[in-house]
Image 1: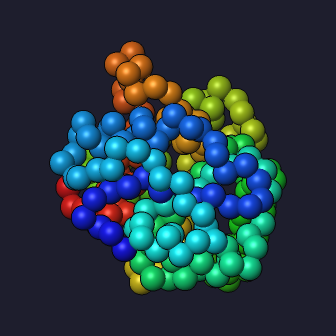
Image 2: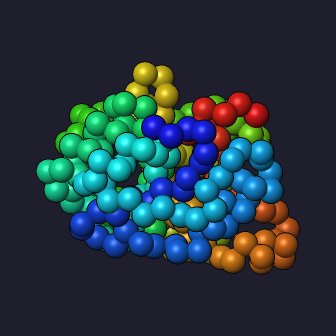
Amino acid sequence: MQRSKFTFARLKYNSGDWDTDQRMPSNVLNSLLEYTTIPLDEEEKIVELSSHDLFKYPFCYLSGHKLVQFNQQEAANFKMYVQNGGFVFVDDCNHDIDGLFARSFETQMSNLFGATALKKIPNNHAVYNSFFKFEKGPPTTSFELNGWGDDLVHDYLKAITINNRIGVLYSNKDYGCEWDYDFRNKRFLAEDNTKFAVNIILYAMGVNS
């Protein structure tokens, strides 16, 4: 895997709608440029989950609203990628723990890694302190606070851990939509809500703050 330069790689899978929150990657890349000194590719890379190109990138993003049903090659690649040190940040755009995306994605993870592999992580996990400090765990989103999906504030994230490192970080909080705005509008926010994205990526890249 290429770890010298960070690339925001989005996973394209055959089922569902993989191409959500299209402005989010450039916004997150701008935050990495603003807050860190890690070398960056300036544009998002779309990577077929069924392609061997997947294994070039240590960080990948997967999201959607609809069904997640990996075909045989996608499933094999996903499992091999995670087991060999890759990191996938998965975000449920429905913000709904019983919605179609959540149920189907969790079924895929159970099939690939076992029924108990996907677990809640504690709110003092290293991902919450990898750069910025989030003492209460995962920050809330406006979609949770204003009512969306299951109308709950999810005070946890889930993960599949491989060799004491997160391989799959899974959110029902709809961070993708929360960060889906032109980065030039960030100046109008009282607090930059993409800071947690910086934490996730630096954790995934094994970069110490």
